[in-house]
Length: 348
Image (cartoon, rainbow, N blue to C red; front, side, top):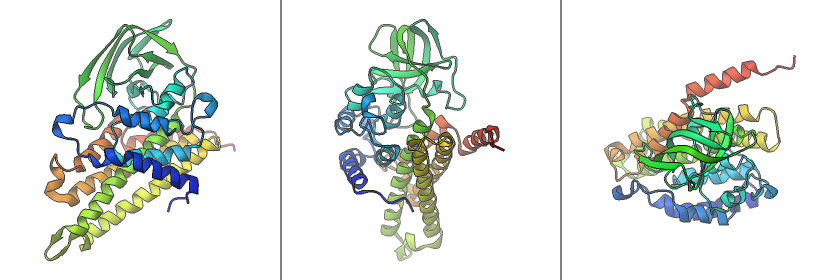
């Protein structure tokens, strides 16, 4: 069971859920709209309500609040499987830069080039070369790369922010596995870049991604439970069959436990605890596994209809698989977590 919410947090969830109800109801996307870009109207609305800047101090351009508030909204974004880079913006807003206020207000769409981030397994550390205040190189697969105004990437170990409207920037759309997040390649040729000061971005970023995954897994599970109540076979609802009943119950328990891990990670960040990154990595490993299993099992419960384009099951499965491909399988994440645990000082 999750920790109880305050009255203000309940209101926050209600506001986010209402705002995201439209995108959530439009799944799956129409075939002809599968390559549509980011939902700019939704992005601006989230910014106007202060939801993009949660967890960022007001003097840094944010809306205040804590990580738990940010994760509550992230879970609702995951439920809606919205066409916006919400977790990406959380990563961008972890850094100090002049565009933070515009990003938090939703007037600027800023994205991370995840493939260059040190927190991503197998990252392309040499993708960009920084020379003074310009960068050269190619970002091969950037979510919402055709729509974004700014991209945050790492040139080696140096974080840089690039204005994609400036000279030396060429973008090309690419085919995406996740139909709700179109990708693009971005070629930078002596493009102007702002070098940013390094910050501890990993705990915040990984925790928000985990919260989104919990939401997507929950959406898939809720749909499967509802279908199991309505679909009849052999004169009774299929949800009454032990195999399906236990399968769905297992997914519920797994997602609920993962939600607790996300809450623990959020609390560790808000309290400034030294184990915040370990807690965040634990939450992400659990969320990757729980969301993927929920989406996969939900598709199986729906049977043949779950494999069709017209049904949203494939949307949930593709979103969870895309995140796994980006941040690593649960096994790989746990290997990384174990290495960090054994490397950490014991204090003995």
